[in-house]
Amino acid sequence: MNDKENASLKGRRFLLKLGGVILGIVLLVALFPRLLDPLVASSAAKREQFLRPSLCDTNTVDSTNVIFSTVVLSGTYETADGDSGKFEIVTCGHDLYLKREWKTFFGGWRWNVEMAMANFYQNMRVGWRGMGSGGTGQGGYGNANNELLAGRDLWKGTNFVGASNDALEFVNGSNSFPRTEEFSELEKFGTYLIPRKIVFQDNNRQFTYHVEKVQFRNDPTEPWFLEKAKRFGYSLQEEQKLLSEQSGSKTNN
Image 1 (tube, helix red, strand yellow):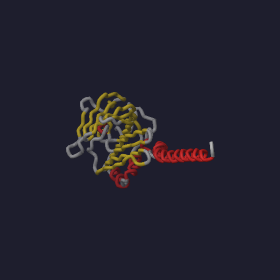
Image 2 (tube, helix red, strand yellow; image 1 turned 90 degrees about the vertical axis):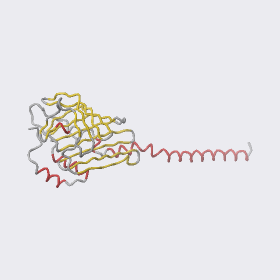
Image 3 (cartoon, one colour; image 1 turned 120 degrees about the vertical axis):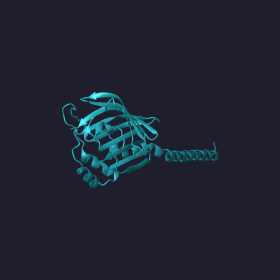
Image 4 (cartoon, one colour; image 1 turned 60 degrees about the vertical axis):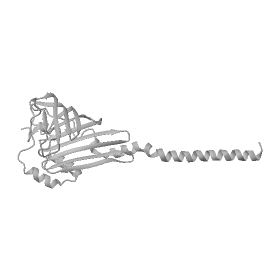
């Protein structure tokens, strides 16, 4: 092979190597964000308290002979349109209410929180998918005392009454959002009946909550709910004033 042929062969090899380097750079630029997505999502998830397995400790009290102030229902949910995840409903009397739904998936996560207090209602969702936000939303209004919320009708004022075979279906008031609720698969805990299944229709979306765990507790109480409200930008001083003007404590007595 003469010098001219050697030079031509070296030239072709150089072009092949250069083409390989350029192709590698193009693929790296195209794929690197996708490869990084799970790491970024995981890092972001660590900052989200509403993605944690439980906002409450595991200790409970015996509902048969101990005064309790709070009831926590938790388990899994599914929707008629194929979504699913985990949920937790924390109630301290009829007035103090927080429900959260959350799920994690490869490269992303999302949570939704609905809460109500004496003169406050808020529904907020936050999501993350890949390198950026997966969607957020927030909505709320004033007095929510009569708003139908999943599991809320297990309370009557400050008294926990549980479910009843004579009242398993509930409908929201005519001046509120169209919502319906149905209890089923009742199970006795102490002297109370608890629905193991709650079907909740919110406008055109149907949620089915499967209650896997029931806790009768003496916490969390008012300060915990007020602290959560900070995330929604609510005036804690105003809400505390409203709560302090109410008579009675949030107990099952």
